[in-house]
Length: 405
Image (cartoon, rainbow, N blue to C red; front, side, top):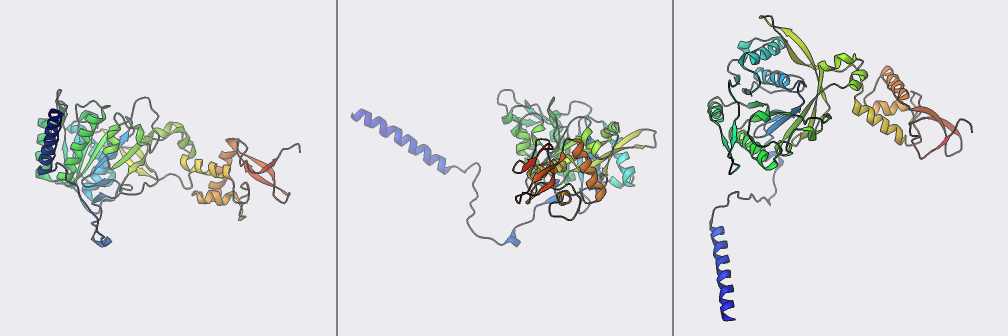
């Protein structure tokens, strides 16, 4: 029994020694304890480069399918930031330094893209001097290699050279295109991809800049606007990003809704906020691809900010209107009459941004073509009235009168 007790005391002593040694060591990641009150005016504002899009010390991921226009959009962003001029909803408060790294486009192709964007903006290449640095590669453009045994990530010579340029030029924004070509990690391995994302976030923090990563959508998956889950590979890409945007080509239904020819929809793309931790996610933003002829005879597409026709209704708006019709007004099914009556469907349409009579009539026509109808229902006082009825017979909390009754 004494021998057993001695063994127990020995193990307890070992555990206590190990615990003391752990306490004596400097914590790897010290905790920050905050239990005091504060003044709101003492909180530093978020360090936006461009509000809602680019934040210093953080990573923005732009997700889109091939040919959706995300690379052209980045050229527009870069030129806008460098010039200090608005580009759609991207509004820099001053001229910013931008560094771009493109694995897919060589020097000449990058110059073509920027030339076209500058023509749209009424500027010349010289206007970007000192503000835009374009980096490419004539070989494999991997920035992060992975040790096959330890699985740790380490910088390639290209990454080391790029970091020297970052240290010297101090850009406000670093744009990298595309993510899948920047590292050797298995793209479906969350642990490995998390290390990749941590590396780029560390870069953003160390150099007080915003980092933008262009990323592809998953193959064989319909890319729903504003859905971060369409991003290709491990979910760690979206999880580690502070801001995620999606870029989608206009759908057939959207083209029809905007009154555009079906074969023209490929010239239009929408940008949606999929994850923005530091700002509210706003309405979608639209761009139109327009071709500009350069002095060398090449024609190059530019993503130009585009405003849909007045009183056009997006798919999201139409879904909200249909849900409102299924629910009904506070006093019964919505009336089909466009009047000032409290039950008039005009109120529902105006609440959803359809403000003109012409636009409201167009929406009603589309609803009736989709199977919505005008039915007769019985009020609580047993009087009858007309209301809009969904194809499923909703609102279902009222007594609809069949035609033969």
